[in-house]
Image 1 (cartoon, rainbow, N blue to C red):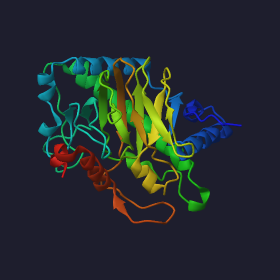
Image 2 (tube, rainbow, N blue to C red):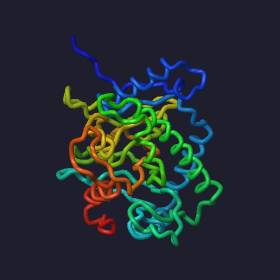
Image 3 (cartoon, rainbow, N blue to C red):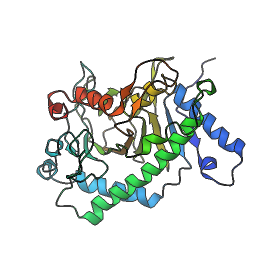
Image 4 (cartoon, rainbow, N blue to C red):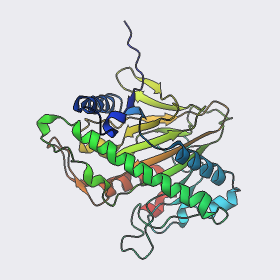
Length: 325
């Protein structure tokens, strides 16, 4: 009998409710643990993020990508302060693997707003955001920053659940991951994929890759498709369906390394051969970049979260990422 593998959907509302039983909360922990250790991905519902906030972020995203290219280039990433990596990244900049062509996606990157006079401003993923002059603060900057705050809150919930799901033999406290959300690196990308009319098997919206940080939270546009996850036991790409009122959650390389592979950072890609546009909003909890981590099972060496992520990102950018080195 052939078992069909699908990316699971998990309702975390019992964890969010003060009236839920301990058994219901434990069920959420077990479901998240199983999804993250098996697939590295799951669809999340029952998260409590208001639909109005999601509608506003879609409106902001559309407003930006509708701008003429020259206006988007006024806030290109190479104009960000030092290695802060903020602003517009045009298509054909990032290549994830040797032998692939550059990604067709374009994106607008923001992070925590760090003023220029902050001592850490200009270090990796730390600094002031770049905002296009032609879009009003009320309709662009404000909804983006408000949405980011909601994502930080959701990430705080997720790392608590993940902490509760670690193997008991490791002896980790349930709050083991709480320091990730203290002064964290929290880049967020508005992503736009134009229809791929010239289909080349070496080119994707986003090529085969893993995320670099700890936890990723993705909002997918209704009525689109294209996100796929590699599942090693069957050597197949599993589609991640777009579900209404849902977020896609996945583990990144830093979480994989910290948990000695217990929570999997899975390869994934975006294949946009549908003939239509695709939009998404990706939030990344990288964590506190100064935090030193070591595999929780006692193996491996200690590393800095910030240096690990910076070197991985710079590698995928090639010559275009020279300002990250």
